Image (tube, rainbow, N blue to C red; front, side, top):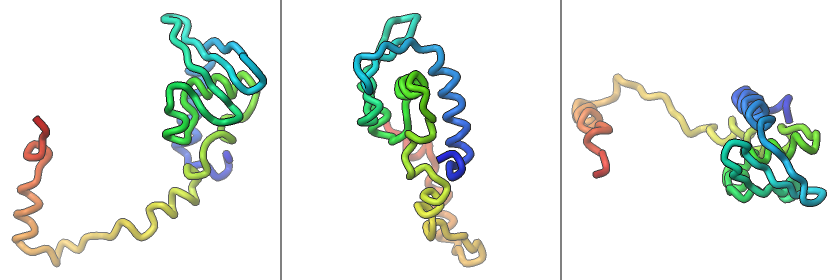
Length: 127
């Protein structure tokens, strides 16, 4: 998927690769591994074939978490092949197609401007 991946996806995979190489991987079966962090012995169980991790991030984001990256690298596979196609340039462009329309500031009335200025992040804070 590298040729079709968004540039930020490739950059994120490279960053995760560096971090994942610092994890210890202990295989349980052909596709299941335990990934441990050395300094606190925390671990996660990854199933590369089912694309799952016990931390839940891989399933939720459809993008390999650090544990999945360590497991995939341990298996000597390309991480980009495990990133969902939804992160491809084509899918991302399609997701945002037709959504963002430019604003013609000449057509905004004073009422619209006062409403926009009344809304600020401070006025909508959650206590």
